[in-house]
Image (cartoon, rainbow, N blue to C red; front, side, top):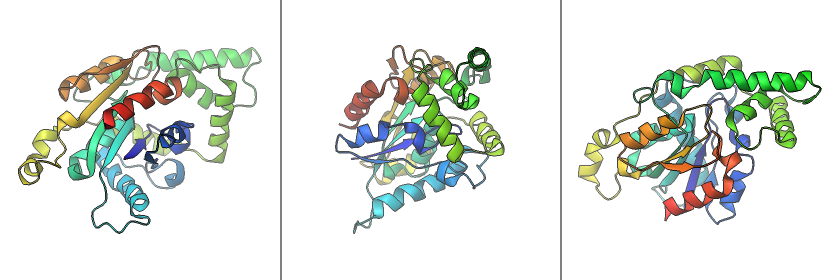
Length: 273
């Protein structure tokens, strides 16, 4: 059983912050690819459309799966996508349906289903930046990245005051981070993403290989009820589009792996059974 964890806008594998290890501890194989422009691929220009990210990610997945393997056909995987990672997971399933067992969308969104002001809640960003600025003026949060502190304040319901977390992510940023240009390019890609009609796109696969074909019934949707970045209605719209029931997590922000790692772990293992 192999899980592929896909992070979101301007984030990389380091920002899973221990969740991948929790998942590995259950005996599952876990792959954490970086998107082009982020992490180990920070020097690459981020594509301006979500489909163009797929080949970069499949290459990383296949490199891991082929290590020590004599199989001609590599195993299928579970794609777990947070935010932008969910958009990419859908495109990956659309283009290589026989390689994907299931897609799990976490706090994701699509332009053809939700308005831009729900997909990116600017007022929440302003409030988070204001709160971090106030704390800095009061003598708090010295020696850390204000940007990372703002990101955590925006995306976490439970850990906005976690100094060690802010320090660790500030250290990640010092080691290497996504450029402003690549961040903008990723934002453009997200803004223009439309949720694909998977069943229609994979009609030939259903005819030729009905057992292995990926269909929209293989899509699961997880929604945090306190998401201040992407409004929870965005996740509900995806669930409706793919004819599935959204699973809501209470008292949880956008970054579910930070706020509710154990409930998320149980959900993923249950979905893989």
